Image (cartoon, rainbow, N blue to C red; front, side, top):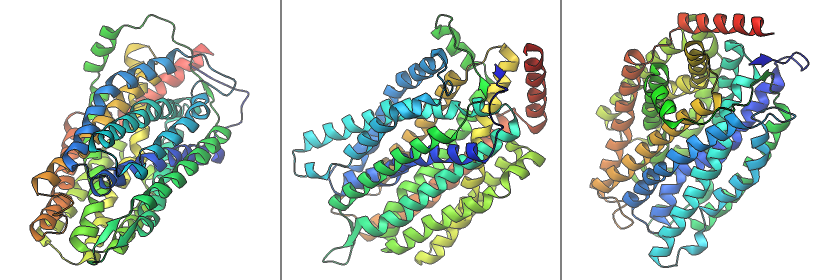
Length: 463
């Protein structure tokens, strides 16, 4: 790994460009997280348990596609703009189209067997194929943009700002457009409006990807891997890499929190509170919290360590959600307050977790002497998808347990169950996150700084 000396220095263009890359990712990812289960349960008539099962089943496909894409990226030759960024341009169009096709409301009167087939087909095409093909090189690219851990922390910060902006566009604006009030005064999802919203999000995702491609510069030259792929060696390396296991487990716990919050917002606000405006306000507040935290999280993590700050944020988030559960409020705006304050935990971890995976990549190189950005990020990406599946599957299962169907969506015992799930699952997820970081993840501030120094000396000798 050598640093290129003929390119412009790391700067604002890289930060804003990298932000747009995740903005593009989340125009389709957050749309799926927030609305896909609601769309198929309320518009297409598919049971929430089956939708959750589909999301978990797709992860078995990802076990192959994620590792395969990681190997493809590591073994690909660097292009004129670098090793990773070329994939952004190549996959931007296909992923945008696949995302739009998931919300084909024109099929709502088709036989149930066909609707289930279409749901599985389009979800796997979008998530397991195209999202994998663009997200793994995008995430791996952070190591090539700069070798400085502080620059990477800035990229992680701006990546999460991209998520915040996508959350504002989807979580704040979209509910006001896609829901309508029926004859009984209930807030109901419109299939046709949802399809239009999906088209707009797909177009926006494509534009954001192109901005990322044109603004980001890869400075660190990462050579093509040429040795024969050894699955046994890969699995052994993963199983003995404590840092990778720690970041994988912590990300699964965080996704259990984040995606449960996103999924259940589509049920607790329209069904329990009967207040779509409060849902939009909560999502807006979450975005504001991320932007506020972005102003100090990097400096805080540089002073105290990414691991240490994340543990404190997780404990804080758990306390807030347990408070919301024991309060059992029926006031939507009080719950919005709980939602916003608890989002500090999500915001802080997400603002620095992407820098933590580059810390893991560095730690692995220090220990083994090999650089495998794409493969390690592929393992991490697959683990995150397991977290996504666990969250979606658990949400669908628990909604089924409390009796949620199209017919019972507004029954008192059902909506009370929705409230309990919305509070308790994130609270437990936060506790798991804190425990995993404390006991499993070994990369403290001191160790990260030591690794960076070792690799800097290694590159200096190589040059």
